[in-house]
Length: 607
Image 1 (cartoon, rainbow, N blue to C red):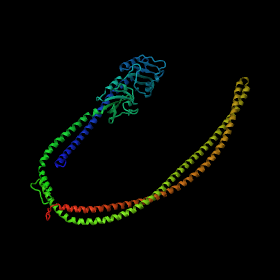
Image 2: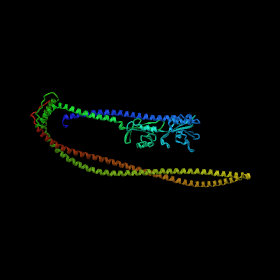
Image 3: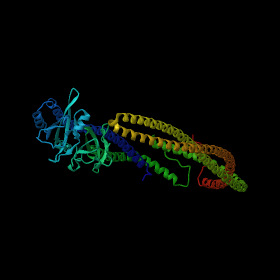
Image 4: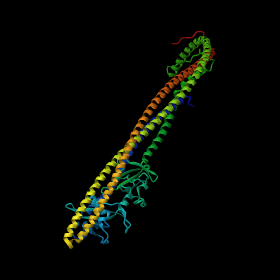
């Protein structure tokens, strides 16, 4: 089917049209996709910012109400202000705690137990530490079962903390509002703290659960900063791809995260793509039908020329026939060019017929000489192969020797390293023994000081005894104490003398040990020097063996290259012989082929 020029032109035109439409469609698609992505990102940011701002304003309003308690915090009866705050702000309970005595006043009339100290409560500690209004992590109220938070703020008077105000407030409204956020049917939003705890989610069972239940990639650090601000983050949630964008809630460490369903967000883009594909198919079909009809009319005269040329080709190679050259269009030009071509072919055929006989004789002589050269080349290649095998054996022996030298060099280097490490360790031991000797001397000096103290204590005890004797009956108790002090001083002096003796003996042994270690260090240094000299000699042997191996390797490479070149020469000679034989055969076939054409006695020259 593709053998027809008309069919190929029709197909090529259809392909060009299809490629142009595809390029245009792709350009339009990516342009629309870019605008769609930007619009989706803007809409997602607007939803996140709008709802995040609403939550922030709700928190900020309650915080401002609580901060308005500052004047009442310094009055004797702030209950009215607390009741008003609870009623206006929707607080479950509003209260004040005082740092002086830990007393607390609660708007709901709750009287704490004796062991209750508000100064130890988390909301009190966080507010004092922050020195500003804080919002605690959400928790479930034990009495009402509602999800609540505590808003607390410290009150100061000239830099002195006078009270800390707080209020418990349910956030069911926030949770409900977050659950209602759904830009598309499969999209949703959730409120999460900085440590990844879910505050609000369309599924109430997810409240106060870790965000890792939504996606395994969420961890405790995922929400320490806003996500998707530059461009939405793509993530799989609930088995569907979502675009995530978060908005920080002012006054808290919360973030409102909008999860927009990617499939629903790109529905319009897919519709544009489908329309482009349908348009492409329709345009190609219409263009193919119209172009087919036009080509059928245009190729009618060319069909006539084809029939005439087929008539010439179906004969017995009669190069004396010519096509009619009537007209001035492209078909007439083709006929004229064909007639000129046939005339030139006739002239060439006559020349080939004369030269083919000479080519046949020359090809026979080339084939005979090539066969003789091929035999001599094969003998030379056989001798080179034997030489190459011998050199390879020598190379293997030298490489084995070089490997053994390298291994011995490595072993000697390892021994040298171990000896060096041993010398370092002995040097450290010598240093340690010297430090022990110095420490023994210091201990001896300390013992001497203790001995002097015991002697002075004994003298003081004697003086005390004399004074007690002078005092008579009144100094009897003091005399007993002085006697005990003398006994203690005596025992301290005896202990000091024993310690001094032990230290002297230990110092002598340490000195002896230090001397022995120094001798061992000297011996180890000599051993390290000897091992180093052996390693150096083995290294020189290894280098020499490697150089010898490299030299033999280069000889081996040269011989192998010579062998390869000889083999290639032999192959080329064989190919030349075969080519000469084929040339002879082709010359015979050429003579036979030229003989199949009907030629005039003399070629016509057509310019």
